[in-house]
Length: 343
Image 1 (spheres, rainbow, N blue to C red):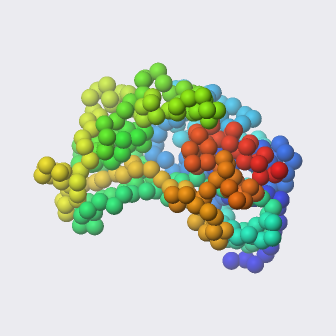
Image 2 (cartoon, rainbow, N blue to C red):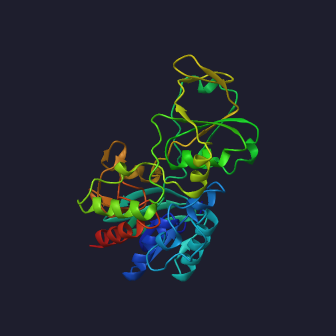
Image 3 (cartoon, one colour):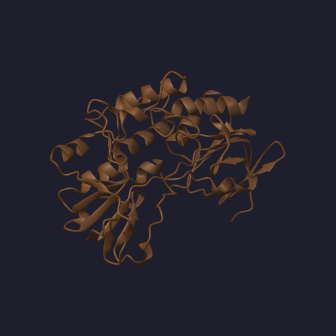
């Protein structure tokens, strides 16, 4: 690693949608800043999704602050989002350094020393926008080590083609589970396992309504989105559901070498298990700060660290801002993080 030392008033760690939204408000505030991103091109986590993934809302309701996503037919796919983020970065001349891995953020006086693969940076404020995609979560299940089939997380899933004619279990009752199960239906022999019966939102409800409800909850005027349901019926999911291809069964109890077994003794041979079981925030670079934590996550006051208001967190979901993990929702929290960290 090079030994050169660099400085910037503000550093943003992560160049996906949350990092770009944060850079937008830093630019508007006239603050010198640099975005450090470990990807080799724009797009963040959208570079790594499965081919059929769709946004929950039309393009007009899936935009970062300042510039509306160009329209597309129906719900945008990942390619459209990557193109939008690329153009957004160019439009606002976001100062992104590509292929830079941040290994450590440590306190240095009132500011921070940030160790990276291109050298050591010094900054007054740091905004974490690393997301969760690089830290997929797979629960521990008895017998998993003896299972001879394939196991992968939805983060590694790309398309149903490699599973044509194979027996596949999809685990997870959220949007990812429903979309992957729908994508595989008609190609593979799919078993969709969930711990609770899946709850589909009404077909007319999409991300616009979810964001509205989340915004009301953030203002203390509502009960949140949980009462509406868990799964947005985007067109591929709706098509598979209406065709009777989404058959949910309870979660299996354990693995066997050739498959899985349920509590009642039912067994089933399985070729592959795809875990659609969520992610965890990627924050290992903050270990030297020894932040106070609750349930494993840094204790925050809104989108900044509770005991370090110059350390922001943007884009991790409800933990640091309702709907902050969405394109339409991240802007309000990026704005708050910048305002709080600079005052």
